[in-house]
Length: 202
Image (cartoon, rainbow, N blue to C red; front, side, top):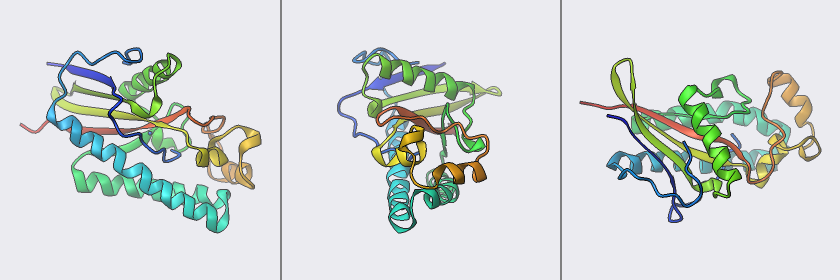
């Protein structure tokens, strides 16, 4: 049996963007009670971005935003792998405007990201957008969870409009990500989402 909910709850703690990260209208309550596993998924989704943000802030302060791109390229996947090993969830970041090819969303993630964008356009607070669902994959139930990643001020140095990019960023992106789709974002705009996946253990 499929269960699904997208929650826009004022009580949720805002999520810091890591610069990458099925929507009712703002204020619409979920019709299905939240299962116990959602709280654990939420905790995991909010644990990785602040750690990466801190690392990126340090890199920018030390050697500038262009070098921070290389740090993000290496450290973000490491943090996701560590979180996966520690929690039992498969953790990664995805985006409709992906930079790293590993951040390309699957069909369920794409629908969720598109729904997040529609909810934000309708007035929802992007930092509180999440979706959970139990889906069937290859005949087996799988838990899916996503939480939106709004663009922070720090992020526009590497993900903003052309006139907002930091020194050397355009050149470094051309070197590392020749097919980059991750620029043009404004502060507050949904940059992507944390996405978690876990088979339901019988």
